Image (cartoon, rainbow, N blue to C red; front, side, top):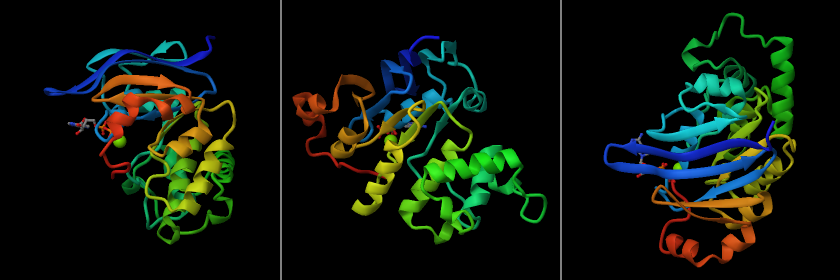
Length: 252
Ligand SMILES: Nc1ncnc2c1ncn2[C@@H]1O[C@H](COP(=O)(O)OP(=O)(O)O)[C@@H](O)[C@H]1O
Ligand SMILES: [Mg+2]
């Protein structure tokens, strides 16, 4: 078993003429905390989509745990231990926190949810859900409706849903975007306290947050690798400052 859990070799994702991800190669070590930064449209979310199988790379190769997953569908990659949160909220507001956890654990869509039938979690699912809610600091909110949660708590729930299956690789797409400073502190603390054996790749614009969470930063621009380094180096990097200049720091 190598130290590298995720390996991308010359990965490209093309949408017609647009190279959303262009020849990106990456190595992520087991247990690493890595940030992916870059301006709006840099290809960060598309890179996550390529890793999770939502889009198929048009070139290159992706290995997870020394296994070629380039052609695997999303559910097979999830079964390998890859989990992610979405940049845009993906919750069911009329259901409770626990019911959303059930959907996440069973890989179901809301329309398949049995509102009046057997919607009890099995013992094993219950344990997994409780553990993930605890890690996300939502243990006391399991019975609340999602529509009653604050926006910050909703982001915590998304994290809990991604953690529920016990992933070995967790991809977080702008987990703190749109949060108040107080909510941001909670989400940052949740991420920092996640078990060391979970490898985390985080898309995030806030350099202070990145600096406090990750070991290594990769910067993309126009789909391409621009630079990488330790967070402090990255903050001083002139090329990176240039690509961010005059661009919005946050986007929907
Ligand atoms: N499904 C898609 N179809 C066509 N173009 C897409 C699709 N997804 C993303 N793009 C385009 O790919 C580029 C990269 O987008 P994205 O990966 O969302 O960037 P980021 O997350 O870094 O802001 C953008 O120009 C975006 O419009
Ligand atoms: Mg994005």
